[in-house]
Image (cartoon, rainbow, N blue to C red):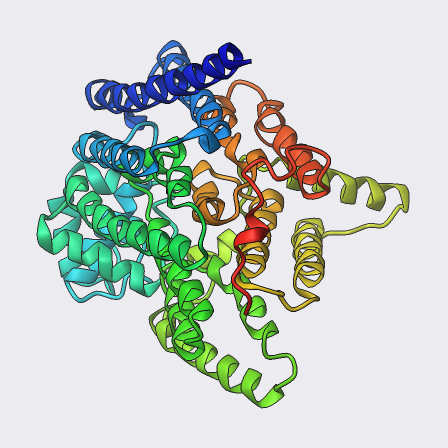
Amino acid sequence: MDNTKDLKNNFFFYVWIIFLILLIAYSVYIFFSADGLALNLKPHTDSIVGYVSFKMILGLYFFIAVFNIRRIKDKKAWLWIILSVGLITRIILIPSQPVLEDDYYRYLWDGAVTANGINPYLYSPLDAMEHTETDVPKKLFELSDESGEIIKNINHPHIRTIYPVLSQLVFAAAYLTSPWEYWSWKLYLLLFEVILLILLIKTLTHLKLPVIFISLYWLNPIVIHEFFNAAHMDLLAILFVILALYLFVKYKSIYAFVILALAVGFKLWPLVLLPLLLRSYCDDKKQILRYLGLFLGIVIVLFIPVLLSQLDESLGFIIYASKWINNAAFYTIFKWLIQQIVSILSISVSQIGFINRIGIVVLFLICTYFIIRQVPENQLQFYKKAFLIVAVLYLISPTQFPWYYTWMVPFLAVRPMLSQLLYPLLLPLYQLTYLADYIIYIEHIPILILFLLELKGYIWKDWFGNLEANLIKS
């Protein structure tokens, strides 16, 4: 019996050691290989397959490691190791060229435009490049010439920016720190994430959960890569969402609604958590109206620069909401089912795309209703409901980019679900979806099935321990 126990403990120890070494090795690999994997160079499939394979191996070891997280004995020592390794990997990646990504070019351009006092929602990058529009400020042409290859590498240059006002302010701060440098932007991401790390630790401590669970976020390979190599901006909204929820469970509701509104000022998706916060006041209609009015008032003020622009399909918000589809498994199946129903009923529908979008919104609202129809009994259940709302949003969305997965990862530190912790193994396949359409189903459908089974308690029940014993009653 003792030998079996020792064997299990040794296995756990070596898995964690191998994973931590692999994590640092991955960052070093990206640091030296990233220039050859830049999207504008159109790297060969063989190079991409090697890169994706490394990410998948790393994701597998991450899952095995967190699967055994309960075996950690000296939690304080391990916590310092985990925090140190996570920080080292991020610092190594800061100067690295983003791999197979080009969103950051838009961030750098928007930052320059905003920092120079121009409304970024009025003009597209193409307007600045063409030098033909008479109503375009001369300064925009100067920035276009000054940016060099940056403006030329912006994807969908004919579309005006999709990023909300508060994101633009951070882009501008990065530009003012060091113009046109992605490493400057990544330093701001690191600042935001250190604050997020502290906030998550405070949340775990408040809920009397193991602080070691921070590793489910801090060591998640998707989080590390998407923020500190790919340089995606979603971290900005995530910080404010977690802050809003923390303030809410600390009974500082008015501040929670303000911060959640500010989160929408970074990216639109935090709006989906508003019903959960309002649900706690279902017996006080006046309070609901006050908080709702406060929230909407702040959001409207934040979006004034957008509202002052031309609201047509050249604006990123509108075209994204109406047409954008990428890497979406569930939505692709859903869309196919709608089309089959329309075909069977011999209904002539010219706006089938609009019907698909409305259908998925209705489905999301139905799921949200069932999630929040009962007021959370305690604070841990409150976080679970918040996680489920964000998870459903991601799983059925028309766009399932790997960096959108990061929206739910902080919640996994508070309410772990092994199904979602498997994503770092499968999401790297996103970079190979150009080879075959079925790859999107390999990425997402196994996770969706496991997620439903886990929710029902058929698999991995209470794998992370009896968290209910640590609940703080509201």
